[in-house]
Length: 149
Length: 427
Image 1 (tube, each protein chain N blue to C red):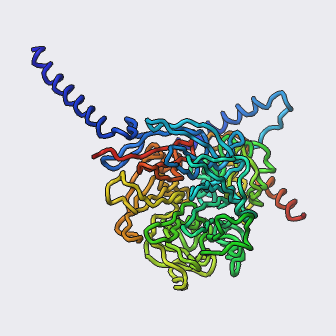
Image 2 (tube, rainbow over the protein chains, first blue to last red):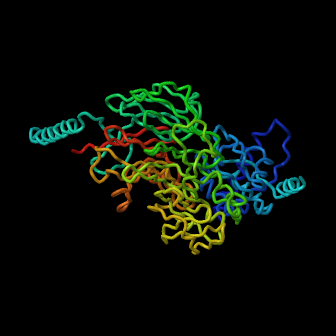
Image 3 (cartoon, rainbow over the protein chains, first blue to last red):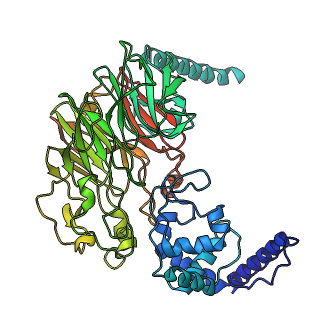
């Protein structure tokens, strides 16, 4: 119970900080509270099963091979790009913050919309990251768009 | 009272200075190890000194008898892919220049030439009688047009005594799956990638512009080789294969995370022309000591592979990434090291969530050109602490090996570019 309270506290203060940062740019629509304790717990489970082997338990990745998930625009930035990496994998070899990584990331489109949303919400709020959550609906929309192509 | 105290102090000072003086004498004519052995843990009687810090991804290395050091960089730094250093009498070295505007791994010196590889080509540079490169801007292109993918892209090189150059061509794939590293993705039948990768190709050392058409596929079924060397005792090529990854993440129903961390073995192979080490159809299980059919090709972690595939000469723990292999022919180290192999294990990542392993240099005893007896960790703690090694947060990652004219062992680090020199100080 205590742990749940602490997580909630962290999440709410995180949310306040974020909304404070974005204030002034746009009138922010009320952020949906998607990153609940349950989302974090499920996201962590999925991370352990499908992500940890390459990106490591602390999200730090492996130099030259598997990119880190910490302090990178790939995780904290554009949600569309991030969701698409899970759905389609990444094999372009592009530079990520000045470094290149050799391993191919296979598509993880076998995960459900909810699983992808949860694991990305977990990653965006773990390892020192603090960004908004991702909704299953957002994944669903992108998946539909991708299959139409 | 004070006088009584003074006596042991004086005595210990005397002992200290005597020891210090002897240490000086023992190291006479050779460089002295750093007080902390550059953080390395070494067997008794050995010490290490820091030759240089390059601040670049230092891969393979050549040390000439004149004390010139050539280091191949994985990525070009200030338009230089090969860094040249000159040693002082104390063993420290200064960067004196560089050349070769290409990244890569392989570098090797033989018969008056320096050979170096990009990830697609092999070049050679003529040396003068001081083993200095005569014309760094105009190398001869010996091999070109080699396949290069994103992974296993480096080309390691070595020469034999009969005018041949051996080049590793790693395969840009983990296990030739339809979807590389994908979940339950099957192997592509016959694995067409084998026609131009996953093997060692042999070329003439002095013929220009060779490619696949002029080369000979010397040995196949080798996923990726980074460390390789020519054994002068029995005139044979030895290579260290990087074994496959992702047994659990691709095949969770067959392998749990613990099995995935311990399989397959990292293998040392003694190669003959025409050998097939079996990738991607099999892997070597170092726990069962068996060749096992890969899950992508119908394996169930028990089914044994075709006996036509060669056995390893030695099997080491999984995923430790052997990046350097050197047969020691020097006279500085004690007798047991002579003609044995040093292997630089860069360190694992594919053991997670189990603790990572490696980040050390191993010694493998040999007798009459064959492995003889158990291997041991020779130089440890490149990572900084055991915790950093376990978490893949190593400060340094050993990669290339070279032997100095005096019999010192040089080790490169491709994380921070530290060049280590390991010496034997006991007489």
